[in-house]
Image (cartoon, rainbow, N blue to C red):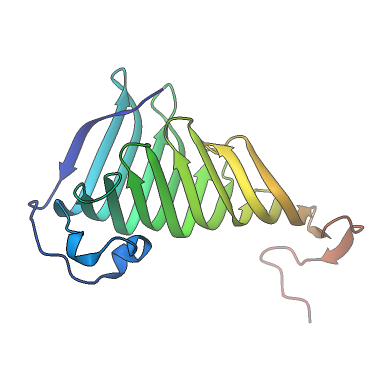
Length: 209
């Protein structure tokens, strides 16, 4: 299923400018600087994606820079804070994604989010990683990097993850640790080792000496 960007709200005027060295483009340094020039830039943007008139995704960013010349595939840089909200069939929020920075590739419909990436689903489960790819066509998110998942009862760490875009069904490629909280006791498991019991104090109680 393909999403269509029905509305793009830009709250500052679009401008053309001669590009100089900036951290926003450190992921595309392979392109010669004298050929790399943005087609437009804007601050404080919101992009609304719909499918058959149904709200699906809202992307907000503090800064947007678009490139469509002298590149093999047009792309858009979103920086200084990126927030993505996913909606279900009833147009209720199903999950959110936030990151410091992202690149969206226009033809392949793929977005790579980087640096302090967090995904939260409607069950309160949170994914933390440093790099995450969202494939708009397959509605999947994935990474090969270190991941940490926090749920109401567990903290799970590992390497690599695949999930649907609303983060309701996910799989960690290699689990490295599981920390499980049950009845004020913390059970810790690493690899295939037996569980080891660590006693925690109850929230609000005096810290044990």
